[in-house]
Length: 62
Image 1 (cartoon, rainbow, N blue to C red):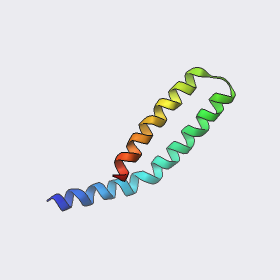
Image 2 (tube, rainbow, N blue to C red):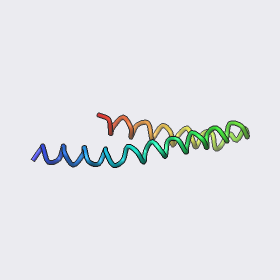
Image 3 (cartoon, rainbow, N blue to C red):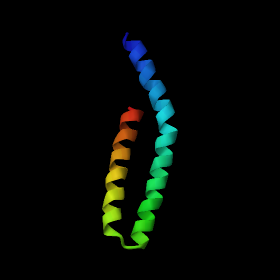
Image 4 (cartoon, one colour):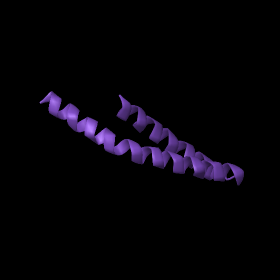
């Protein structure tokens, strides 16, 4: 049973990683635009989103 759960988690990670990387790229571009516009609210929002993505990425790679 443990092997089945492990395989399912691996499949989930394999499907999610490419999408997550695209989301990170998009949010980095959004952060860059916010920094160029000195939009402090968007900078904070983007940093929070990127932190959540970072945590998810670490979880999926474990």
